[in-house]
Length: 114
Image (cartoon, rainbow, N blue to C red; front, side, top):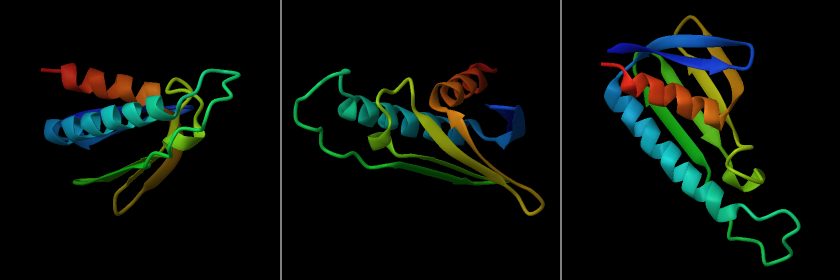
């Protein structure tokens, strides 16, 4: 198990995370990106609204509890999307909003480590 660092708006949180859990989260984020693309409309578009997409509700229970939530129907593009992140254990709980792109970058960096 290696340490995973999530960079948040005003700081970062680091916790133990398994590569298998990181790969599960990466797959969930890829599905979220597909949903975000499905509901994205070009600026000024007057066509029919796309069908609503289900929200991402990822949960991992290990040394710490990690939850990632995102409703793809409220973001105009995947680049603008934010996720709600909760990290907690028996002593501490951190809940915040982060850019989806930053979460993806942190995850890719973690998975690139030997």
